[in-house]
Length: 244
Image (tube, rainbow, N blue to C red; front, side, top):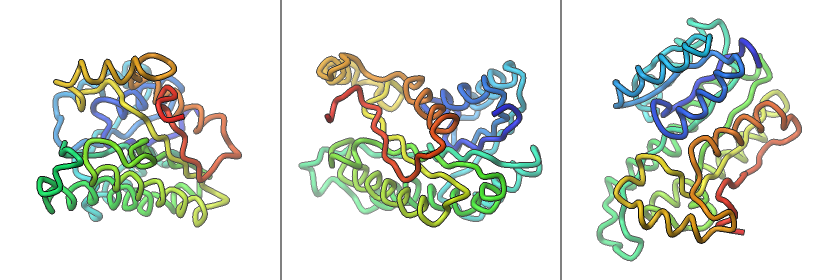
């Protein structure tokens, strides 16, 4: 994988950052995409470059198709190629599932724009370059897309749609490009800040007895990219056995 290039959306912090660092340790040059976290993005860039690879920062939302196309082109201009796309950017609004009136239309629009349309926009923009380099796409979705549970009904629906898009793209981008989803359960990131006790209880209730760290997800992403060359169109759960 040395000197390959990866574009990772939503990668200033959390799972995206862990994936970026995991790939950088293998000699992969990285484009970090982020929408708000300027300070964290710069810190992540410094950590990546300390591993001896190059890093490009690109700020903007993946829900803007024109900006996404600019980001892909900026990556190719900077590094000369693109081999790996990790669609990690995601948003949610925490709304109890039984609070039907509380799930506002604007929440639906935002979560679908980023979690589904944004993932598709990035994949479409990168498709020609990935096909040329026989690359791969990893979509970070969620077990919420398989169970209907999660932070809101809209979020679960968006991740179910993302899993479906994964399967569709795996068909149309084959045989040159593999497309898979990694579907984490609860991961210890800033998304769950303020819910530590609840998260701890859920983790202790899994067969493996803990909540995932971002690095647990990153290890599976790396394994699918580097070692799973005959796997495509799959939804791979990383949830400690929570939903066996």
